[in-house]
Image (cartoon, helix red, strand yellow):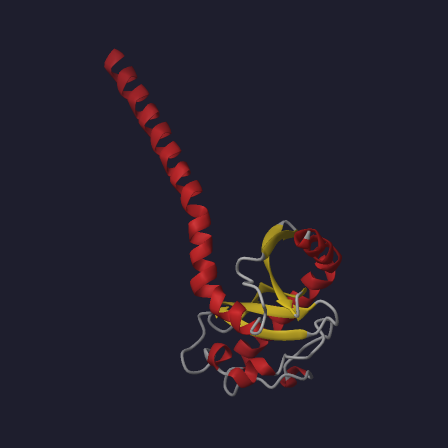
Amino acid sequence: MREMLKLFIAVVVFSALSGGVLAAIQNVTKERIEYQQLKFVKGPTIKQIMEGSSNDPLMDRLKLVDESREMNFFIGKFEGKPDAVAFETFGKGYGGTIGVIVGVDLENDQIIGIGVTTHSETPGVGSRAKTDPAFADQFKGLSISEPLKVKADGGQIDALSGATISSRGVTGAVVEAGEIYQRLKPTLVEKIKQYQG
């Protein structure tokens, strides 16, 4: 009986130590993993959308909570003013979730660019939502508050040939970005002012 108690205590202590070590490793690597995702997965899209900004939007970012979800907002400075933000939302495509970065001009609420970050769409078909610049260019200059749809649904966005579901997924992500933007714009503007100092 005494041997079993010793064994039980040893297992409990070992489990507690292992759990502590794993938690510590997760805490140490969390920021590094986030930075790697930003730099290599989202970074190229964000920099493309914020092309011409005088700062590094990956470095100049804010975290805000929208409906219990923490999100990164990347700030772009143009002519010395932080007047653009970009952030990621998600739509449902043919193969699963599509991640889309949407950039918005804070002064006129117009979309300055979009870009797909992650997807599981069919190569050569739905995947063109990420690689076809003509598709993404359709969103530039539109109001983020505008109700966007693909033309097959009575909207203004030309769907990619053979990839209507993927096109709807991207458009849906942009619509969600508009809803988030409307909810958080006052907070965003205030935080950016504080960020400026």
